[in-house]
Image (cartoon, rainbow, N blue to C red; front, side):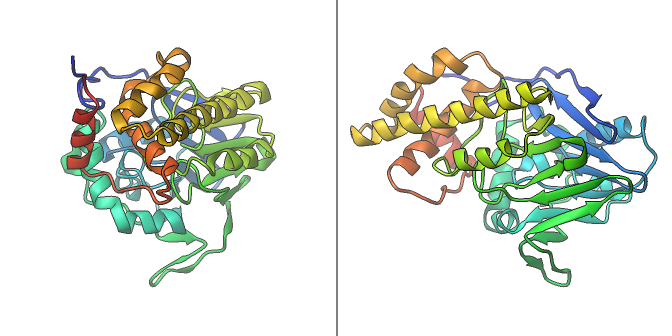
Length: 329
């Protein structure tokens, strides 16, 4: 029996949690849906990952307004995926004047943002309710390690002072995408990792650089964070939970890529590679949020990389469905 495509059958609303992790840092999480982070200073607020739609963003803004009336000046895009970035326009009414991203993210928006937007809308109908409000692609105004015409150039590392709290922003290496970017509040030990770290949820790797990802995770380990807001899953509190989240992600990535390399070495086709990968992945991860959604895209990318394709192929709505259909029984 064929499975419903991606998350098209996942239409039930999730329980949202907005919780304080430190004097200035908050986590907005929703049972395996994409997370956002919030950093509240004495002068300004920063949001890390701004949700899929302006409608969803307004829910996050309403929660921020229960604890702060400061302008939301900064929005950080940890990477380019539509479910993370297309809610940005809602923040302009709240004072947002800078949308921050890495050079890699800026390039990916230009290269494949339009295709990704349609692809993800088809994959996640629940997350893209009220999509008609989206004015178009979200473009950074401040690019770390690069520049935007008319906006100048930012260094490879950026420190933003929100008033009473300083946020360090940089790209620790490739992993979930090229140019993944983190926010690090060193004085409070809180890390906002984007999709470089997931916990008890599917780890989407359809646009990943799997061979490089473990080394990037090692850079995050070295921070010795006391709390971490992952891309999906509950906020991680305490060094032991943070370590568990990083280890969970690394185990997913390394298990997936090992299976893909084995499949490539045996000249399996993609469907056989999928069956081979399931033998190792299902017993460990089979019951976590969006596992069945992620795995076909993950195996497709891992199989490509194992066969020497360094740059991830562009996902389009058409390619998504062709791949999905090819892997069904």
